Amino acid sequence: MKRFFVYLLTGLFYLMGWQVLAQQDAQFSQFMFNQLYLNPATAGIDSRFVHFNLIHRRQWVGYSTTLDGDGGAPVSTVLSATMPINAIRSGVGIHLLNDALGPITNNDIQLSYAYHHSLKSGARLSVGFRGGFYNQAFDFGRLRPNEPNDPLITGRGRESQFVPDFAAGIYYSTPKYFAGISANHLLQPGFEYGTTFAISPLERNYTLLGGGEIILNTDLSVRPSAIVKTNLRNVISYEGAALLDIRQKYYAGASFRDLGPVSSVSLLVGAAILKDNAMTIGYAFDYEITGAAAKAATSHELRIGYRIPAPKKAELFNIRTPRFRFE
Image 1 (cartoon, rainbow, N blue to C red):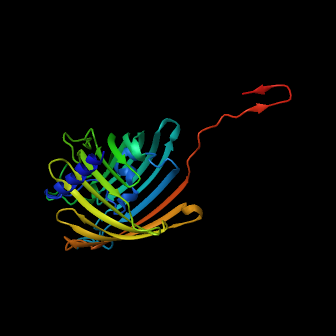
Image 2 (cartoon, rainbow, N blue to C red):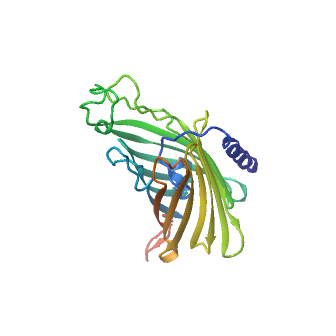
Image 3 (cartoon, one colour):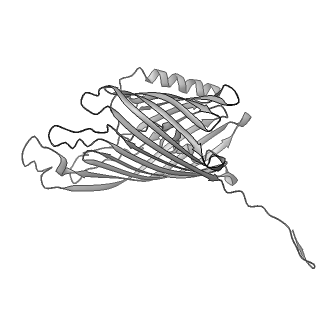
């Protein structure tokens, strides 16, 4: 399994040399806390807790156009919940996504299931699958046709369409590091909106995710992580991050993202609050360092996480009465 991790990291760095293109799915700077959205094999990966996670991202804040001021900058929100089923070495999860970009609004609801196979030294190999529905709404009224009275645009208003969507993933984890790969949009669904061709197809893409924890002392540790998204022809995006964890209660760090024509750096901070660190609050500030000439340079992202103890396996117990004894 160590070889698997090495091969995955080698692949990550190899892919970084490919051409990078724009991506179609919502992106989040705090990806290391949003693994259920990235890989269904992480459903219920924490056998101790039920996790709830909410991330809201506003990209290119203040972006506007010279024509009408409405730039349609991306606004993305994902809500997820995941729970272990320890009795059968499994886990389930659900995520809901709302992603608005100009005239397009995407809504995604998916159910995930994963089976976790225990290996030596506390390692686990997980296999997961998810399925659900992807809805895309297209506001044709926000388009600006080059040809007046274009019949594909004029008078159509706002239309939406539902399509089935599926994903699968593999995830390997140990107490010190993790690595996984997932395939999204397996059926490559498309949205025709009454035409004979797909106006906005969802291309199948693959996500490679890896990371770990380096313990410095009893109070400090470093948590590096990296993610690459690709369609196997070119890299869609890649990014790497490193967080300094202080007493498992506070963290701060930085990340770098490359989307080809656009690259950015991010500052990430967060803290655990409430009893037993039940709630975590995180914030990410992004600044575009290349490709920001046509858009606002800053983005903001807020994360709220909450956890509760996982349900325990029901235990049988003896019931005794003066006359009878049931085992």
